[in-house]
Image (cartoon, rainbow, N blue to C red):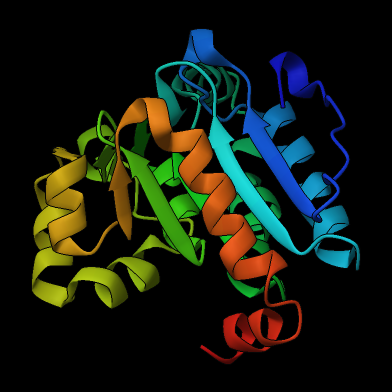
Length: 220
């Protein structure tokens, strides 16, 4: 998903693994309206496609996804554009719901920092594998936004209520190893090995267990 929501369609590989990549590296894969619209449409298609056995969500460049595009946010705010207030119910919520509920494993491959809604998207995935250079930041309070995109539900489930409140009230970048210790991610690998590790995990979860995997992700 690139500039202006450009979609570079990538069919699932021969094993049924579909990879969705944020491709706005110059903006650290921030979420502008075209990107959110394209992501929602792609996830809807993948969720409905019986040939897809596993979905991988990742980023390009230095970031996984840093959440809302604040330049667009400020522009819309200044213009009093009503779409600003509709983006949570129209984009963020349905994206997270699809990531969390589709009947096939979803793997978030954190190639770099995941912040704000980007972190929330990762939390909605079934598994989160991070490069050792990645990090997680619950940046909402630092920019005067509420903890949306399901993070108020998913974060306490991952780390407990007390730790969730600490991370939300005092946002900071949690490095990959601490994220693993806290339970924010499920695995950390050297950055150069991320692609291979994700491929192996997709094979182990979604591809090798085509009957059990859908049952497991829906049941939990």
